[in-house]
Amino acid sequence: MDFRYLGNSGLKVSEISYGNWLTHGSQVENDQAKACVRAALDAGITTFDTADVYANTKAEVVLGEALEGERRESLEILTKVYWPTGPGGPNDVGLSRKHIHESINGSLKRLKTDYVDVYQAHRFDTETPLEETMEAFADVVRAGKALYIGVSEWTAEQLQEGHRLARELRIPFVSNQPQYSMLWRVIEAEVVPASEELGIGQVVFSPIAQGVLTGKYLPGQQPPEGSRATDENGSNFVKRFLTDDVLTRVQELKPLADEAGLSLAQLAVAWVLQNPNVSSAIIGASRPEQVVENVKAAGVRLEESLLKRIDETLGSIVERDPAKTTQNAPQTRPGS
Image 1: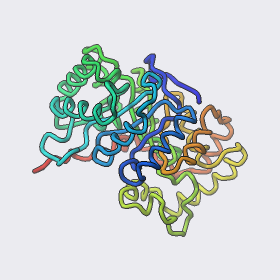
Image 2: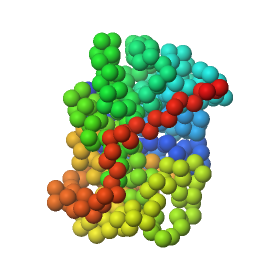
Image 3: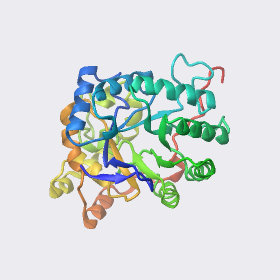
């Protein structure tokens, strides 16, 4: 495993990290989930990403149990706050001071740790003053409950304003967690340049495009039984890629992967890691062997000629519109 600095901070993270977005506590039984975490640890992964909203807090519980007994100083644990948790009361969502402080305490308890390495705003909150949010994050850092602050799916403008306030408050704002893959490159035009200027690193999710870049979905055929596209929780996220045009182009990537001595999934993970602003790529798994397979992308360097051929193969199906950087929907609050 190779390691990279998280933005301009002194914190090193494994360039492939393990995340449990759509698996732990929902799709995968706990014993299998713990086996995936063990496979990640055995492969040299030290960075683990989760969120309080995943499986409505159950994913944090599973990860905490899976990591129990590991040397805490040898791990980087990231979690997030924003989306509704609990019964969905009026203050069970967002980035208010109240929700942030209650959420970090709940996350630490579930994760069985005294602190998280990076505490992330899971989206930008349009209904809470940014000053209130950043001041609450500053309190979390000063209380020793988080070492660094990060965000997820913020626009370039939001990153710039959040970073300005973080500097004034003297807290380390070091990361952004966007979706990024060969098929979804919307961060490249604005978010990446802004992040490079600010010293913010990307911890990217869905480098395999929710499984589409494994090549298992074939044009003109129904999705394989048991795949994410057939799961009621996962299908909403993957369906935008399940067109015959996209799936045909993905199949045309296979000879390029073969030439590089990689599987399609390994090629996909290696591709995002070619971006110097990417600090880590998050992989998920429902089986330990998926971890073992995908982690082989660590340390791979792709030739410029191969990167060009990938672009030529995918052509116009690549989404690049910077307006789609954020997946924000209006915040869902009871009664609104």
